[in-house]
Amino acid sequence: MTSEVESYTSQTSFTVSGSYSSTSYSSTSYSSARYGSYGYGYSVQRKRTGPRGTTGLQNLGNTCFMNSALQCLSNTYNITRFFIDGSYRKDINRDNPLGMQGKIAEAYGCLLDKIWCDDMSSVAPREFKSAIQRFAPQFSGYQQHDSQEFLAFLLDGLHEDLNRVLKKPYVEIPDANGRPDAVVAEERWRMHKMRNDSKVVDEFQGQFKSTLVCPDCNKVSVTFDPFMYLTLPVPVPQSADNGVLTLKRCLEEFTRAEQLGEEDLWYCPNCKEHRQATKKFDLWRLPNTLVVHLKRFGQSRSWRDKIDDLVDFPLDNLDLTEWVIGEEHGHRPAIYDLYAVSNHFGGMGGGHYTAYGKNFVTGQWFNFDDSSVAQVVKDSIKVLSVRRQTTWLCPAYARAFVYRLVQRTCSSTSVAKTTAMQPAVLI
Ligand SMILES: [Zn+2]
Image (cartoon, rainbow, N blue to C red; front, side, top):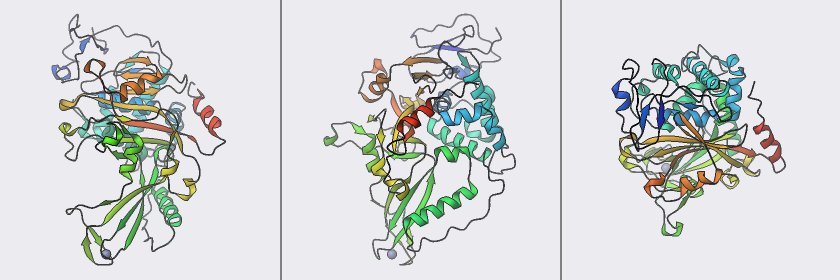
């Protein structure tokens, strides 16, 4: 059999029948310590039974981290529509030295075509993977990586490949010099957009404010920086939390003022000395699509340091209004609905990644587990991700959430939702 089709079943018995083609499947592809027991075997390529966009991605050997991130991104309406209708082609920037000559954008566009316009139950993202590893050798081979790390690389690669700025001007960032925050933040955003202007920025980038205060002379230094996703610390649950952490609790931790460590001093321009300053982050401007990344792996970034505490999160109406201090947004509701989750199971040895995604055509939720895709009821996303489980239920430890802004002003909720649900992608 020469077909490049593989299917994984979650049965505990080994279900391979027939023979492998050793040319297309090296034994290393199968030696991975995947979480749980999976049988590997061939099946005849099946037609997709679910709606468009529910095409599985075959595991090419420890590539579940990539598949999980890709499925989260694929369910992002504004980005997927932009690729499927071909709009992205006019933005391809082949000369950007920070980009990949448009190759990542084109490979991603081809993959989305297969996911959204073909009718196969699963596809093998081989060309996409080889395009990625040409530019990011860390993703070559068959080692396990982190889905968030991959998503960050992919968003950055797509951004530079689609950067509308053909020649990045040199910009010098002026000092805040005590000017009002709103003025400095706006100026900084404008300068950022002079060098970075793409569909990815339009959709995913926000801005946070960081404030440093000198403990000796009280000098305050304020900077505003763009972000593509929020990395939130997962604090140790207090007894008051009943052992359950919430996303808001992680946000509180993120925005809590903290004294810098002794090895991480700040040079105070006033004292002209390195000081153990106090640092505080605040959210200034939020994007349309908010990727929230939970810092589940410790400082050493070792799999052994994974923080397995469960984090409760709302599916709908995540209200971040009180967290946004920017004047432009501060007095308007910032309400988000969840539409994708990247899950990580297990710990040492890499574990296994899956994704939940909400299909923007039908509004149904699906579980994307490599090549197998199954509809899930909305409530189970929450239950599986939040409740402490016995092992047979496979606790899904959410690694990253993706939220879509649904409400800019009080009256526009229904408008925003309707727009987002339009199946305009089906061309
Ligand atoms: Zn000082």
